[in-house]
Amino acid sequence: MKKIIFVGRSECGKTTLTQAMKGEKIHYHKTQYVNRFDVIIDTPGEYIQTKHLGNALAMYTFEADVVGLLLSAREPYSLYPPAVTPVCNRPAIGIVTQCERPYADPDQAERWLKLAGCEKVFRVDSKTGDGVWQILKYLREDGDVMPWEEDCV
Image 1 (cartoon, rainbow, N blue to C red):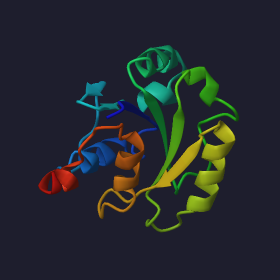
Image 2: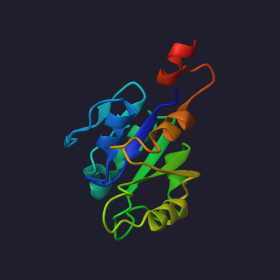
Image 3: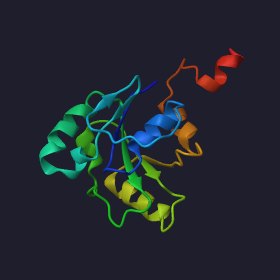
Image 4: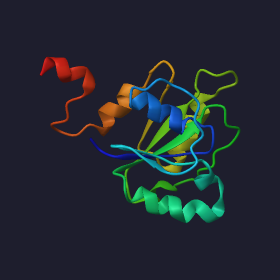
């Protein structure tokens, strides 16, 4: 399975999505430092929100095969400038979170992520699992057996 790094502002849903992708019970947990799991790198939101930490974030992208830019559907603006993804030197996907929340505009968030240069955009609801399997399928490589397929092998 390809390794993905999640990037996004604080409280956009990076850690919640990490928990959902790992099949864990969803609970609030503030990420204080970069967490590395088998195929997921979860970064603190402060890394993208603080100019001086941006270089560190860029260095962590080199540990991943894919960069996942997360953006809450409730955001009034995007932190990602247009055409920013080539800087990653990795394929970049967009992930729209919190689509089900009041005042959410997932269409606007998706437009912003495409403008940033994301080659594909996923919409997820980590609490219900909607959209999570599509990301797992995207990260799948030839020969990978997914947890839901283990009984079929």
